[in-house]
Amino acid sequence: MTALETPRGGIPALQRAGIPLPGLLRSNHIVGLTIFATFWFLASTYSEYTQVMLLSIVYAMVGAALVLSFGMTGQLSLGHSIFLGAGAFMSANITEAWGLGLETELPLVLGVTFLMGLLVGLPSLRVNELYLALATFAIAFVGVQILFDWKQFSGGGSGKPAGDLTLFGWEFERGVTLVRIGLVLLLVVFWVVGNIVDGRSGRAMNALRTSETAAKSAGLNVAWLKILAFGISGGIAGVAGVLYIHSVRYASPDQFGVNFSIILILALLIGGKHRLAGAAVGASFVLWLPEQIRDIQAWEGTIYGGVLIALTLYSPGGLIGLFEMAWSQVRHMVSSDSVSDDADSAAKQPALHSVELAPLRRDSAVGHLVVEDASVSFGGVHAVAGISFEVEPGAVTGLIGSNGAGKTTCFNAITGHIGAGGRFVLDGRDVSGAPIFKRALAGFGRTFQNLNLHGDLRVLDHVLLGLDREFSYTRVEEIVRAPRVIRQERDAYRRAAEVLDHMELLEYWNEKVDDLPYGLQKRVDVARAMAPSPKILLLDEPAAGIPTAEAREMMTQVIAFAEHTGAGILVIEHNVELVMGICPRIIVMDAGKILADGSAAAIANDERVVAAYLGT
Image 1 (tube, one colour):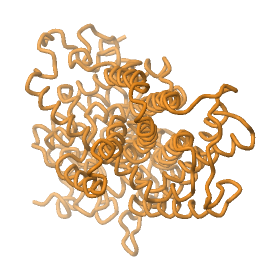
Image 2 (cartoon, one colour):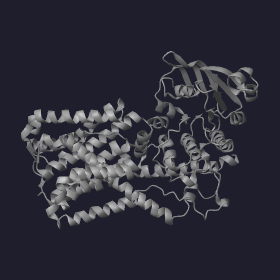
Image 3 (cartoon, one colour):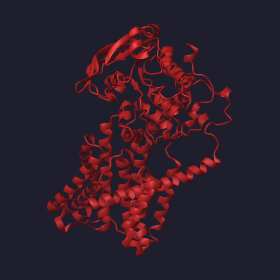
Image 4 (spheres, helix red, strand yellow):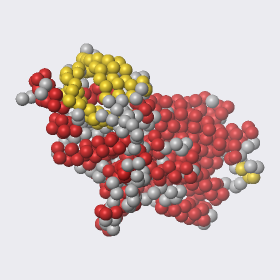
């Protein structure tokens, strides 16, 4: 066993950077439980506010549902009121026709509205955000008409009363008891959604919101994530509908129109659409403010609109975002550097020698890429005109050419980002007809000419996204925060920290990538692609816009990682000095065809390449 294969001692990167490991509970869970206990005991003291408390809980539950479908995945839905209505009328029918209670209402409503959510989410695969909002608007409008016409189910224009409030045969009075039942439901919903947000699903949903292209390249099944977010969101909204009809004791179809959906969206936007706390704060704002200051009820629409405009301009993250910005400023004033000062350089170990990265070493080289007769056309323009080449296992190969030569289009054809003719084989596996995410899972790692980073996510989260394929825990385990989830998340955090350390990004682990200078953003893009130890790295102009010395240093780190894992590298780059220095073999493209293919020395002296690209 060589020295490189043997994990060395030293302080792990995660410990040096002070990165907290995931666990079962976090500080916000403690705060949430404290608030839950407070309202539990105050419910009887302020019984005159029972109705407002119940509606606040309903709004907060639907807000949590919208955090998933809207805040996380970026899918604006104006149709969630129809899930609420379906849950309410199902509850009334179950109690009326079957004489059963919450033990039947809640699971049955959850299952049916989950399936409804999956169906409603299907348009998200075909349309963008604006047209999806219009589609869900239409679904809500049509849904209300169906409720009016389906008199046996909803009572038509007359509506339906709520049934008895029972649980396993025990009948309860409404009022304070129902508030406490609602608090328990809210606690469960927040626990479930919080676990999703904090796990691989939450990172993946955030990724597809900010860049679907990059999410697919990380091996994420974007289509399923979109539909799943709608399904879970619809199920939660349906459960909120059960609580709603037991709260108001009567439901009519006209209560669940588009106006209700808009109010629910408004509440979440005011509170903060990316945070569960935003769902609770927004619900409290739109319901408790008019209740406490009755003189302003006639102006509440104007007030909500004004607050929303102000928040959009100064705090897009809502009231919670405003608090987070203030808290961040306070922490910045009192905190020291991210990396611990008491970890001296002698205690630092090379990242590739660490316990997390040393096992990634492969005994033989991989990344044998075969491209046969690849062709891409845009109308009558042949961007890639039937080219063929191979990248040998573990080799570093350059792909150069003038702007418009077809280099990036060739990359897109290989990784499936564009429809292409021809055949693409990686280590004997034909991936020609596979979608983007399956090609990524087959062993492709990809960076982008225009970065395609996830702007409001942390540097650490980008590397964790790259590691998504390493997780084997199920969605159900994630929802309940099973021990395997915590164990695998901790392993991923440790490995991500070592990858960041190798790319000299460790001190920026908690920074949002939008706040980083361009050169560091380039490194984050590469680190995300490297993290899962792909068989071949396709780097699209990794040195563009950064000095040659910095680019050479970064590429030295990338090549060291590739040599450690036995991976191949295919790199597009306009920095000819850099390419000549790191690539033993260079392929030159011109007008969609391969102009030359050979060693760096041969390419530098090729008259055709000099005339078409290098110049004199």
